Image: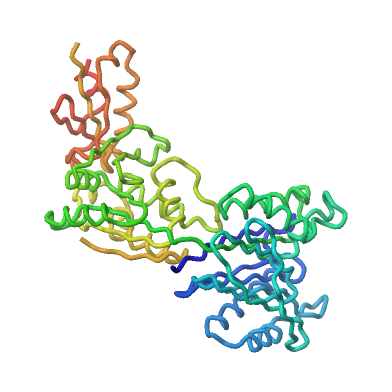
Length: 382
Length: 74
């Protein structure tokens, strides 16, 4: 059985710096996921440029399936030289995980990765070779369900220098924390988030270096089907409702009329509430067997806003329909939209901006945003 | 005493046109009067062009203001 690679990363800039000198690129391909981490020399703008260039060059060449030698050579030859230190320098870690669990790791001056098997950090057998004078470490290994792999920049290993510890947390210290977090049974998201907070605390909230952690693991794919909007042809009401009822994974309905159609066609009871968690988002409703029932247009637009928040990797934590929907979307890998195109004429007179008022437009923008978040999305129009 | 069944539409149009105000108006009634009312919400009363809409004991009123609603149920 094929799995999906779940990946989460979070960075924090050196205290007082706006830009982070670490950079991460993620490339989702049909057969797996490629994660690239680079730590640029120093901190601030220069480090940010170096790290961004390194990851962008690496991911671009990896995508073209160029050999490793060529990728490393190109990176070494392309980076701009620092005027002060007269060197072009940034670290590089590339991890490719195939959907069947095979994994390939390359490290160029990066801290060794943390591979957790059955909750314990295990050593990875790294082969070494030199390319253009640079020492490259490589490992081929297999990731199984329940295993984790973490890539870090040295700011994680050195957490605490200038703060709580003279010599920093160290690789073993980080390994211990990761083992503890794994034992807590946290989600990958929470593990990465907590590790960042732990490092920040060791630095006494004033990090002396940029730091980044990427976590990845295999898991079963999560499916989500969303039914929204009444079909143009009422004879499709039944087909659309059955499609949702029989869909695998989680089920969501967006739209009051859509919910009524589903309830009518399947004989399920629709229960509405008047709990306005957020005054701008209409309350959610309930139908047995459906994971989330929300209002349509306003909720979809607000959900889109949540998903497009720049630089915000955290899940919206609210309990309103839009936050709940955004969370469902972010936690899913494959999303299937069942979209009815019947137009509610009354919505056209609500003085809503055109792109907010037309369901098909909202859905298209939502789909594009979700694709940008590496989700597999399918739309079926009715 | 027979309870009034008050169903407030919380569909898109009605939400934008003040469904929350209707709900708040009913919820703000003094205890004795509130006890004589069964307040519910419904996803759509098919009166989007006249929103906000309310169904009182099976009869739809749209558009309706909070004051008009309170007058009808007290």
